Image (cartoon, rainbow, N blue to C red; front, side):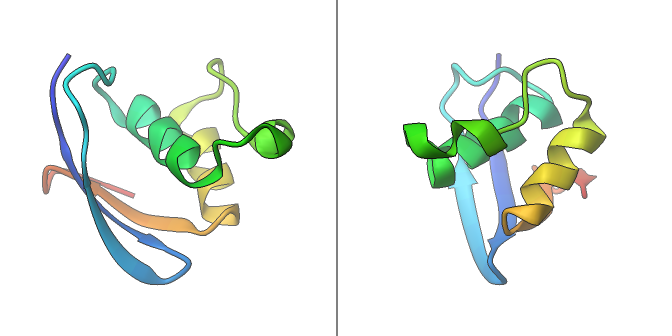
Length: 78
C-alpha cells in the first residue's frame, strides 16, 4: 500500500488530495475513496459504485457525480 497525490476536478473546480498510506494502490481504490470523501453519507450509497466494478465503470460513475480529470502522481490520467 502506498500514498499517492491525486489531482482532479470536482464540479469543474481543481482539487488536490494526498491519500493516507492505508489506501489500496491503483486507480479503482483511489477513485472510490474520492467518491467517499465527497459523497460518503448513507443517503448516497445507492449511487456509489461497487467494489466489483471495473476501473472504467468507477470512472464513469465518478464523472456523473462531478469528479473528472483524475491524475494520480502525474502518471495515471483519466
